[in-house]
Length: 372
Image (cartoon, rainbow, N blue to C red; front, top):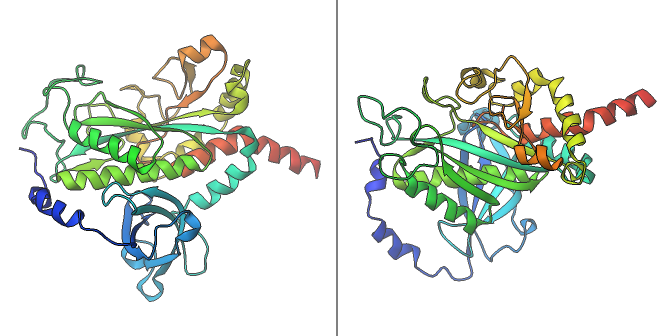
């Protein structure tokens, strides 16, 4: 049996006795932030005297950055700046989850705070009504890091029956997927859907459409909910882009559209964006995983429904290309395109900022510089 954490074996019925206790007018607020790895999430909770009605009601806080790979012990305090609030599906109303930006001692963004620069870019392009939808793939593991429900000393049957599959021999871990979906809906995450993926124990959820900075905010909190739910079940969720050689990897395919792309004749604007992306392939690869493209080297091999990391390509309904134009979009001549290059462990702020810069901002800024 796949190894599970001891905490998952504790009686949840006992927990319910305490969770049902009244808490008066007080409100628990859980602050969530991205740590110094650029992938890990941290959280801690405090009490407010009343339920906050907006993000402005939630005070700044701080934490020990020397324990999160973000500061030295001699100057360790980091600031938590609340940026988006959600309902808490674990302790229920009126309690809240709050996503925070991290600032250093000098009030400048921490190295892994990509939200600050992303937000500036999204403000500059807001007239385009830039929508994103991100497809987050992940793999369930035991605490021994072995894929959940896989044979202890071997492999399950080859890929084929697992994608969108049903049955105990095809779908491993559906309980977690369904709990996560409900938790996202309760919290107010813009979750679009979910499905089993090509590799057994691999799943996907989609978030969107979200406009601008909202995309990164919602995806990061959806990831937090996934990890927190897995904690209750005693297993792990990994965003590793290639958890096992010889099997499908895990991406975070990013769907993109502007107001012009969604209107009649929008295909020409999609094609213009793809042309711009083709000229900056290497730059995008560097920001499409947290390690300057090194994680995607394992995944983007040109096999297992991926393009080659060394070549840019685009095509209609082609899942082996860098950019896919959905068949329906090709037929209707409007809609969106899908960038299939981002890795599962990407920072959505870095990905959406790069796409906005390349497709909407760099040409405009170049003209402005030329005019000077």
